[in-house]
Image (cartoon, rainbow, N blue to C red; front, side, top):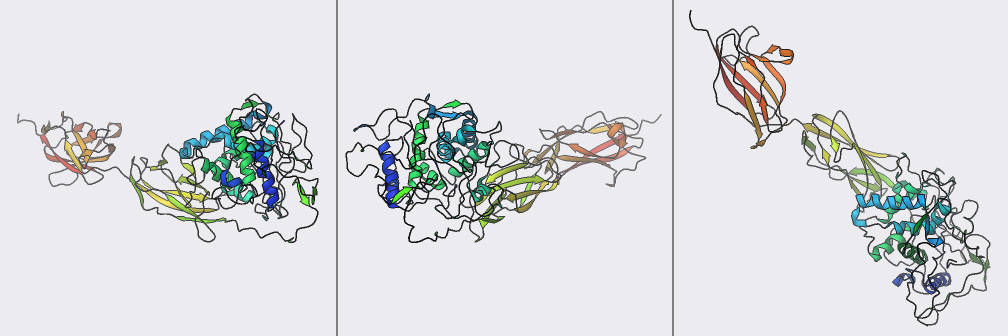
Length: 575
């Protein structure tokens, strides 16, 4: 049977005795990963940090499961402090198939967007085990949504944090206070910032294990964390819930799952025996072991060191079981009945331009500047973790790198988010890029970008043969030109060809040479021509016309390049 705490702890407990008991129980159980350094000093306050804490927490100091993973063998003096877990075929190492797929998909997604974080899916599994017993043993539908809501207790300051309602009950059905929601137990105000749509259904649903797992992964990866480093793992887990007992429990399951796991059918996962997130009832007893009485905490064996004071102390005589999730409570009320005022949770209040300059690019080229915005709270300070959606609109074929017209980016520690590289299409003119921050896009900015035509600053003929034709005949020599810009090939440049008379005026329609236009029509001005990938352009057939004389073929491009070519139409010899 899994080693476990026999009673339930409330997060944020200030009792030194309770914290010491938890830490001692963890240490004596020899659960994998129980060593926490300064985080779990016996007798310490559970609210003290093992590493620098993040502001707030993801889950709102609600309930969590304290069961520890089973050990491979009984602990005896001299056994290493991190015993190896049972083989991967044990019941406790089974993870429901859909839940396991969600964790692994989250790892894969984040590996593509934030590879420096090195998120292991086993860490998500450890948190999911402690928070909700892997979505109540995998009770989810085919899309990964829980069959019934998983809600934590009301965060009303009565033993937990005090968080007044922030979502009008949209997620937790509570319009008075917030409750943690879903398999990863996000409070609504945190979900509003970190929520994800990982299953592609167009919704960010904290009750969906795919959405929740990806959101938890991004939350753990906030800032510059590298989760292949132990200290960064501690920082990440403490940011989820700043409790050394919580960290120790999660660490134990993390190492246990690292020893091996296997997939089990949805709905058949082993449930924790300690009370979990409230839904009117607890999550129920484990399927393979009887439930423990809240009043019967197992007394751990002495630690291998043999030093006194490391065993978990028995409950104080002044404590009696409450019979409710939340564990034991003093028989006498505390001297201070007013809960401490909660710290103000920063809220997203807007976005601003973070250095986006003039957005101009030549058709087919990358824009030199980037679109960058900064999310701020009500005090004007940087707001990290806000989702920002960038969208391209307007009559344009410009795209973000990769061909997308929209992209979602989460603001970094300094509150900034940059859109992917912007690539101009062939359509010239102005278009817009919109940046919308927040899960409902309530804060937005728009930027105008301009695509200019491809240019050339020089044109030259590829041959030097004189162009002469008999009156009424055709010019037999092809006219081919090459366009360059700064000496480099200028491809896709728009070209205009016009025939002028000896005075430099357009030739009248009734006389002089003609160019072959659309549908084989004869025209004196031809537009819509473009150079090819090598900067080359071959003009269509040129007709001599019926009027002898000297004419000019003028070729121009966007960018100012001009080339004049002489055309000579000779009269027939005298009879």
